[in-house]
Length: 367
Image 1 (cartoon, rainbow, N blue to C red):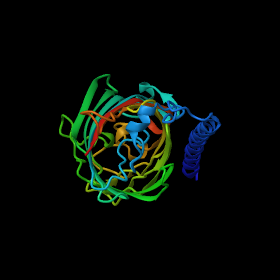
Image 2: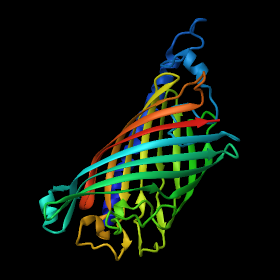
Image 3: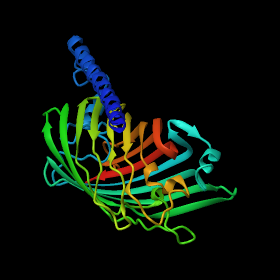
Image 4: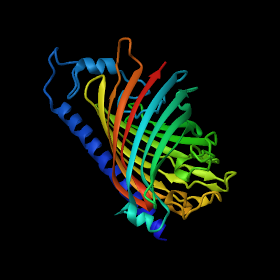
C-alpha cells in the first residue's frame, strides 16, 4: 500500500504539472489570437505578418502534417509518408553522493553495513536511431544504444577501485500511430507500441573476472513491452505535450533475475523564437521498481549495488533545451539539439547513488 501511495502521488504531481503546462500554453495561444482579432485593418505592408512571428519565418516554416519545427520533440515523426529519419544522440550522466529515501548518507554509514560503498558513477550513452513512415499515420522506429559506464568504489579497508563496462544495450523496436489529429494540428493523440530485445550483455565482468553488479550491466537479459501514448499540441509559436511510455519486463533472464518495470510520465512546453531556433522545457517522472529474483553470484552484503532490493526509486527531472532546425539551405532537414537535465526530486531505495546532472546532445535528419 505504501508503494501504491507513492506511485499515486508521483503520477498526481506529473498530471498536475501537465495541466499547468497545457493551461499556460493554451492561454498564451488564446491571448495571441484575441490580440490578432483586436488589431486594426492591416496595411499592405502588414498583410502577411502575424503577432509574435516574423512574416518571413511563417513563410519558411510551412504547415505540413509533421508540425512546426522545434515544437515537436526529437524522435517523433508523423504525417511524413514515405520519408525516413536517422538520428544520433549522446547522453552524459553524472552520479555522486548516496541517498536512503530522500536522506543523504555518508560512505562511513554505508561501510558500517556493507564491505564496499559506491562513491560516484558516470555514464555515456550513444543512441542510434532510424525511422520510416509507411503512411501518414504510422511510423516505425528502431533504436540501439552503446553505453560506457564507470563507477568508483571505497572499500572498508580504505582502498579504492574503479569498475568499467561498455558495449551495446538492448535493441528497441517501436511503432507510432496517429489516433486523432486536427487539421490545424492544434491537438494530436498518438498510440505507442514497442518491444525491447535482449541484445545487451548481462555478463559484464570486472578486472578479476567476476560478474559486475546490476547497475553496471549493459542489457536486461529479458524481453520487454512498451505500450503508451503521446499528446502533441501546438499554436504557433507555442507547442506543448505529454507522454507516458512504460517499460514492462517479461520473464527472468538466464542469470535468475528480472529488472524492475519503469514508468516515465513526461510533460513539456516549447516556443519557437525564429524560423530556425526553439527553446523548450520539460518535466519528467521516473519510477523504477526493484529487481525480481537475484543473481546468485552477487553477494548483497558486499555492496548495495549487488542487492536486488536496493535498485528502485523515484525521481523527477527538469530539462531545458534548445533546438536548431534550418528551414532552407544546405542544412535544411537537419535538426540539432541540446538538453540540460537537473533532478529536482529523488527518493531512492538505498543506499543508492543519486543523479546530479545530465546532458544530451543530438542530431537528426529527415529525407
